[in-house]
Length: 258
Image 1 (tube, rainbow, N blue to C red):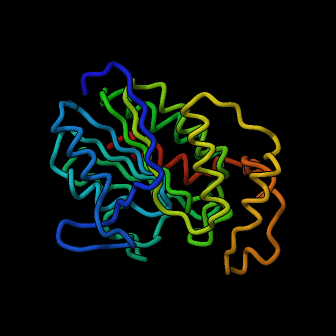
Image 2 (cartoon, rainbow, N blue to C red):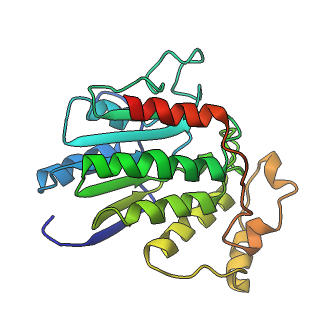
C-alpha cells in the first residue's frame, strides 16, 4: 500500500454473498471481504466499500460489521433476495450493522437520473466524511435494464459515471464485477468500466470484429429472441433517464440522518 496511486480492475471478482461457513448466492468465496482484509493487512487505514449490485452486499457488510476501518454502502433493489419480502431483514434503510454500514434499498424502475442523484447527494458525501485511503467498488451488472434478474432499469452509462465520479475521491481504487445474467450487457458494461478507468474514449460504434464476436454469443433466454441491435453494435446503452422519485429523496435523507 506504499504506492501513491493505484488503480486495479478485477471483473472476475465481486462475489459478495458468501459467508465464513457457507457458500451463498452463487458465491463460494467472498472475494471482496478477503480483498479488503488483505488491504488492511498491508497498511490500508480506512476502506470504503461501495456495492452497486442489484442484490444487497450482505456478506461484505457482515464481515466488517464491527470494524470501524471499513465503511460499507450498498445500493440494491428493495425486497430482492437476500432481503426478506417484508423488508425486515438486513439491507433495509435503517440497517447500520455495527455502525459503519449504510443501505439504500431502491424500488423497481430505478433509473440513471436517480443513480446520479444518489451518487451526488449520498455516495460522495459519505466518502468525504469517512476519508478512506482506498475505495472498493462492486459493479454488479444485474442492476442494468437489460438484465433479467432485477427490476432496476439503469444503463451502463450510469454505472460508468458513478465509477468515474468515485475514482476522483482517492488515489487507490479497486473496481470489481459481481452479478450479471445477460452476457451481452455484462461484457459491454465491464468493458466500458475498463475504458473509463484507463481514460480511453468509448466509440459510438464497435469495430466489426467486436460486433462479430458479440453476435457469436449464444444465450438461451427469452430476452435474446428479439435482441436489440445495440447489444451488438455499441458499447454504451441508450440512457435511462427519468424523474427522481419522492421515495429516492426520502431514502437519501434517511441514510444521511443515520
